[in-house]
Amino acid sequence: MRLRVDLLPHGNYPDVVLVIDVLRATTTAVAYLERGADALLLTSSPEVALNLRSDNAESGLLLGGERGGLPIPGFDFGNSPVEAAAQNFTGKTVVMNTTNGTGAAHTAAQTGKHILLAALTNAHAAARRARAIATEEIALVCAGTDERVSLEDVYAAGVLAEYLLAMGEFTIDDGARIALTMRRNAGNPIEALGSAGHGARLASLGLGEDVRYAAQLSTSTLVPTLADSSDVAGALRFVAG
Ligand SMILES: O=C(O)[C@H](CS(=O)(=O)O)OP(=O)(O)O
Ligand SMILES: [Mg+2]
Image 1: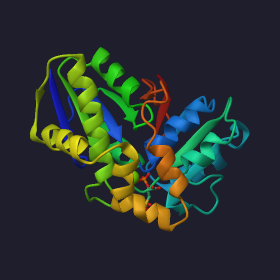
Image 2 (image 1 turned 60 degrees about the vertical axis):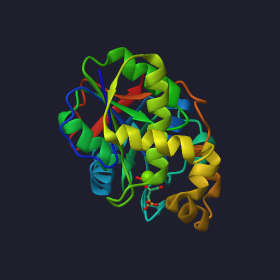
Image 3 (image 1 turned 30 degrees about the vertical axis):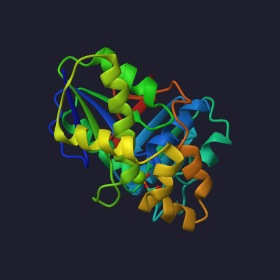
C-alpha cells in the first residue's frame, strides 16, 4: 500500500483521497455534519451555489462560504466551524463554496475513486476509514491557500500519516516524509496552527476562535464522504461516513 502526501492538489489519484483544509473548509464540513446536516454540496463557484438555491427554492438549501475569509454576499453562513457548531442543521443540506478547500475536493474528484474530507477534528476516523477502503494508495491532499503551501494542512497530513503508519505497512513518498517531519517538529496542534500564516490572518480578522476550534484533535468520528450518486450539476455531494 502506498501513502502519498501532496502539499498542493495535483490530480491523478487512482484510489482513496483525503482532502485536507484545516483552516477552514474541511473542519467546517465536519462541524455541519456533527450538527445534523443530511448532506453537503461542494460547488465549483459561488454562482453555482446561488443558482442551486434559486433553482430548488422548495428544498430549503442553506449556503455557507467565504471569499477573503469573510462571508459571501447572499450566503447564510461564512466558513466558520464555530458558527456551524452553534447551529442545528438537522434535515438540512448545506451548500459550500470556499477559496481553497472546495476547489481541492473538485480536483480530487476528477480522478479519485473514493473522496473523503479530513481535518484535525476527525483525523483518526478519517485515517481508519481510508485504511479500510484503500486497495493500492491513500493520497493525503493538502488544499493550501491561494495555490501556496499551508502549514496547517501539511501538519494535519503528518497527523493522518502517523495514524495510518500505526495501522499497517506503507511505502511512503517524500511528501509524507515532509508532513511527518512537520508533525514532529511543529508542536501541539494549537502551537502549529498558531504559527501558520493563515492562522495569524484569521486571528487578525477576529476569527481566532475558529483557529482554536480547528486545532482540536480527533474529537469527531464523522468523515464527509463523496456519495456515489453525485448527480447535482457543478456540485459534489458529501454525506456522513
Ligand atoms: O476560510 C478560509 O479559511 C479560507 C479562505 S481565505 O484563505 O481566508 O481567503 O478558505 P478555505 O477554502 O477554507 O481555505
Ligand atoms: Mg484553508
